[in-house]
Picture 1 (cartoon, helix red, strand yellow):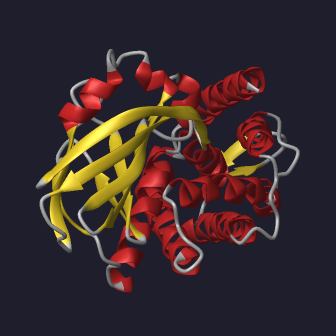
Picture 2 (cartoon, one colour):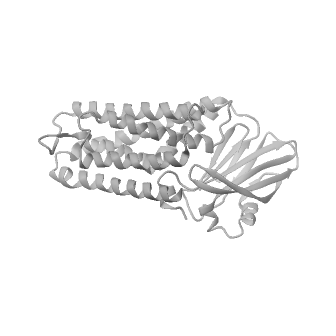
Picture 3 (tube, helix red, strand yellow):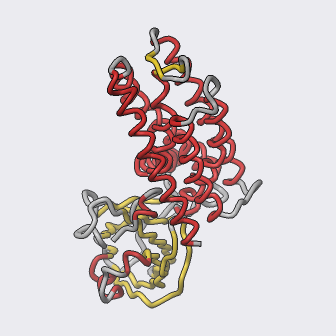
Length: 330
């Protein structure tokens, strides 16, 4: 159901926008074209799987729209409720029986609510929620985005794999002191963080608006370059420069999540800040889990002669595949 190319960046999502005026509801539901292939009679399923307490919903065909992961079909939604209420129970159950990683993302009253297979019915406010709630939602979105963004994760792993090694006579050797590995990791992670934070901010506030298709291709190519540098080292001692230069591309990729969640101008600054903090929290968690394992493995000859080059080659192969398929998709 989910193309491997799309899965390289994010899982399957559906975008639901909902607005209440008096007893009337309006909005839309955007379903990915790849998901429509396994959803016969989608309009009937929307009536069955999407419910708002005390309201009758109707869905009509809309038109094609684009999100960060490709083409979607938008369905126009209208509804009539028994009364005007500030909160209602809302249920979203589309696609969970086919894909447990699927999410329904509801945008309502300047905030968004994620529905998952374990959280299909929630009490939703139709009035603006406190900024603390909006901040937490953006933060968790950032954590989620980095956890399922396989191209970003592969880039990070390509940078981490050689961090416990050093180049010695055109070969890799284990570092003797953890301090040196820690300094290298800190430089690389900090450079990557600064780079994608800068471009995320620039693109989120429309200072720079690069072509989204080009960015997706460039991100895949950046992963390939980082992995290739492990196999055929060009940048050796100052790998943080590679992390910074290529990391600039990844910030442009992160901004798609802000746009997909419908952040308004009033909440965009808070959303960008907290989303970025969520990305960093997820990234640092991955680093904290991976580095101790890599440090123990570094003394093994199998790591230097098999696991390290094989891991880099696998990342390189995936990145080249993503690059080609994203070019073809354009």
